Length: 490
Image 1 (cartoon, helix red, strand yellow):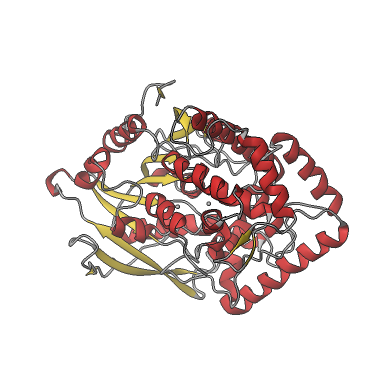
Image 2 (cartoon, helix red, strand yellow):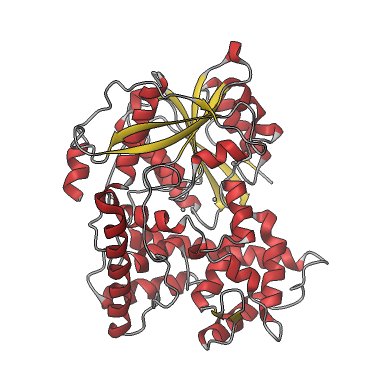
């Protein structure tokens, strides 16, 4: 599977989405762990101080004496050891994002002046969650992403085809991966985090997580509130909400952000779409894609309308990519069409998508009773997003997990976080990937939490607001959350 130029940019910036076993694991706690055997692992392209290690954890936390898997770690020691606070664990999102890549390559803006104090005061610790990257990975002999699968089935027959495609790919991954495929849920990953904490010799850890990293961080705080020193959850996911509700919320947020992108374009003399009805042109483009007329020569096939929408979504999530989105749409709409830039940004073509699907199906089962349920959900999505309804990450979970053969170990359920220090939840009012309503609802579930709002565009405040970065850094260092009602503006 190819890694596209735009996906590489996004990943560099973000470094960027059995039930009984999970319940039993809730009673297990991390015991003493041997210290990691750190070794120098820097290359000419990574910091000289970079150290790497691995630790071993149970595959199934309800059976701590059973089969074990490996977690990959790395770290950059604090550059001001006299004022070192402790370890700051980082998660860049996904699911499927590599924390070791973040630390090694300066992702999550770690190399920027705004975040320099974190480099000075903390050991920055990256880890690849179970199933991801250099940890024991999810493996499949064929790509999980199947562009031929009817992700927007219009008939019962197409719905059966979708479920059979999901099942076929899931069984292939199960054969290649083994029982780990049923234990890549976020609760298991949160228990791994506490094993990392113990191995580091830390009584409490600090946490900076964006996007999916907020779901993982919240799960950790719920299980181990006394082991949290400070925690930033930026681009919040509220895992208590149903997938059906989330699909509508996210589609509506994407639609709202698309119109803001169009408004931005009209105000720029250099935007190639200026003066046009951008929404109507996008509808015309997806209609042509439905007819098989948008040929991506790199992929050697037409792009589907869902892929056109998914590619646009990738650019839409980061405001610094909006000029590229405008050019990508202009290129795709011209005759002859050149949709290469959109095709490169289709989320499913990224190598991390295998882990994304495996973890997603453990955490976000679609909860469909049949074709009628799916069509009713899709009707609500269409109403919420009349132009961008064909793709969202939560619809990807709905379609991609419909026939997944491994039961979801960690479906959404009510939860409350108590006993932790003040946790900082951060949300953007116009975030197209993790809607602001999710940040507000997550903050309400965390006793003593503080909500920091960025009144602006893009996915996460970390990547879009210097003001928010400053507040997050101050909080992580001092433990003092911003005043209630604090709002950062563009």
